[in-house]
Image (cartoon, rainbow, N blue to C red; front, side):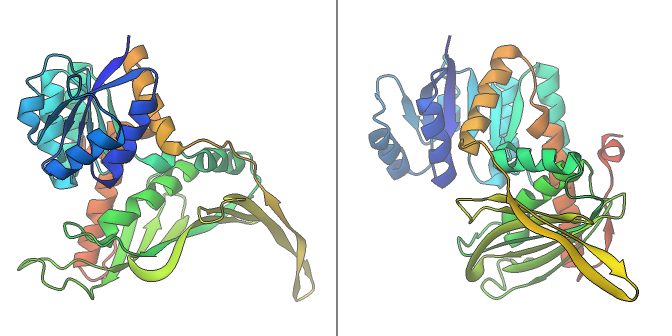
Length: 348
């Protein structure tokens, strides 16, 4: 039996989700919701949706009155997530939500608990956690091929798209933080953020949106990761590295042929001199599969098997929002180091 799905939001990313579910043999699209009528019309035409079988509406409340929905995909602005997801879970639907789950850690935890109470699946679309390169990179690190880990760094830049509701921190950082957390198997205990604003200096009386952000994540074992984020830089980069004492693991999304590679090398010491030794480069083989397809497949499998997805559960999403919230405090405080409260603290 196919899972009947309502998609809330068919903008850029919602359209990608719609495409994947439309192509999946175990999914059936039964409703689309978007406040922009032109988006609904475009989606209906692009995916050849039968209006007699797919309910199109500008309001979720009208779609929610339909009787043939099993699951809801939420791809609307993050500020709308809490109310939509809470309503969907209360009604009895499984939910796949675009990242971030919400903008407030306490709301994330509340939604995660609600899903557990209702015995419904809540999966958050942290797409990179389903990327074959990220999965393989975790295996490389665990196998000790990088050696003892020292530090990490990442760059995520491009000329746009510029957001008007959140800054570059909230728009971009969650991807690299999620990857570092997975590769290290740890959560940062301290964070720091500094930023610059050029485009939107007065979004509100109390808020400006940073176009450039520099982040530092400090992990329990002393590992530090440094992240450079900017949506005002034509030099497009999507690159994340972990450095060890035997080499550097590189995930370069812009390198289509070899997105994951291992640069090997270390020092031999002769007297006062340090001599580079064992220097070589190795391309790491990875599966060729669209990460978002994996997300959608995992969501449908979780529903069918009634087995939550630990890779990107509500708790994982809550941890990431918790970190982002602390980074926002640091950014607002001019780069002050902020201790990250653990989820066990937030649950009390």
